[in-house]
Image 1 (tube, rainbow, N blue to C red):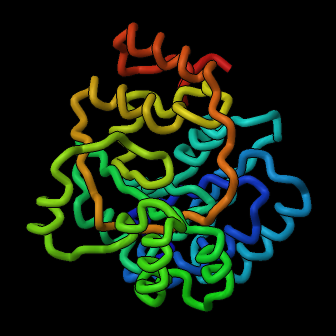
Image 2 (tube, rainbow, N blue to C red):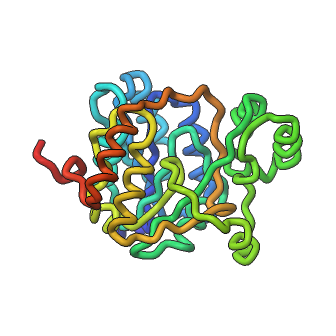
Length: 276
């Protein structure tokens, strides 16, 4: 990519202190099938030691990486995502979490179906603790599903891991259309859209300050009000999710989202443009 031209995509990685996982994510991004993209790390207040390690990774990576950080005042993922959106150089944004490892064609697959007025809705395969250990040992995390296909399937049969089928990339559009008959909701760890469409709802609502509804169901609802097509990208743009205990979900988020749905407004007054 020329230093004078904007990249085709900005991959926004939500991050907080988990350097071990981030190393896998960056390694996988370095091995993508196409390279014309930047990485924007949306850091929700990581500590000094993590920031120091992140900056070392930034210096030694072949990727173009921006690091956007704000002070740790609890769970403020949406505020940090908004800061990352403002910093992003590309007109197309791909959102992932810092514990989700993209497979080889991840960026290429998102861009292959990108359109103005469309939000692409991907998925992830949830690894078992056993397969997470294997992922942490591999030298090629972007190729993990392909290189560990049968152990993943066998473990799934034995009840280890979840949604393993969502890590399988199917190149055939005809087969994919057959398998993705219903369009399920956006998940915050794997979706993409044009920056202009996200700015049309004023980005992410910063009132959500707990894990849960805030970074996916809320923008999806607002985008639909704006007339944006939520388009499934299942069995494409695949990624694997590193095993960890789930964060508690906040009922406060649910109450806020209920109020948002009652208001029926696409634009949030608590997003990128607001009175600070």
